[in-house]
Length: 239
Image: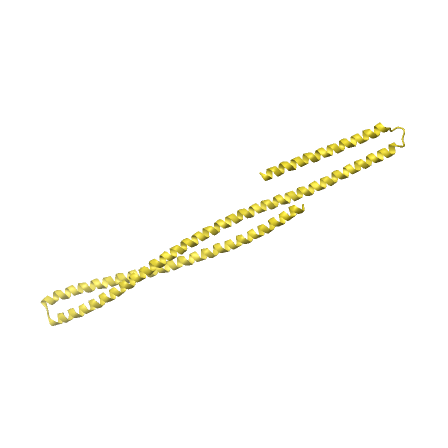
């Protein structure tokens, strides 16, 4: 019974450790989920900035086409020409060069931003994959720890049942010992009383002793049957 109590205490300690590990794993899973949500928010912001840069580039391209159209029109008017048209053409050409320079600058900025976006997107996808794998591993560990906790719970129940069985067995043994002791005392008393009576001879004492021996034999047989039943139960538990 003491060994069973020690095993039960050990199982309780292991179950406490397992519960604490489960709480830590759940906390890690919550932290990883929040980090994953933050990464998704950053990714959405980068996509919005890329869309804005794309719209700006389209606007610059439209302005460049408009300037080129105007340049062609001025050049056609220049063939019919006047000095005023020549001056206007130069002005348009200057504006066109400025627009082309600005467009080139915007294109370079757009390409740089797109390159940075691709790099950050790749990095965030890698981090997202790592977080997902870590989350899956944490969930697997949580499942394993839960199974281990359930197994410890079952072992603890088995240990308690074994302790109760040992306690009951001890009580049964005490009861049997008490009955045997009473029977012996009864036999001794009968022999003492029979020694002073003419009606009781040696054969009567032997009959009483024989009956007592039979009773003791039956008690031993019951104990053997009970032990065999416990042995069968232990064999099933080991399997």
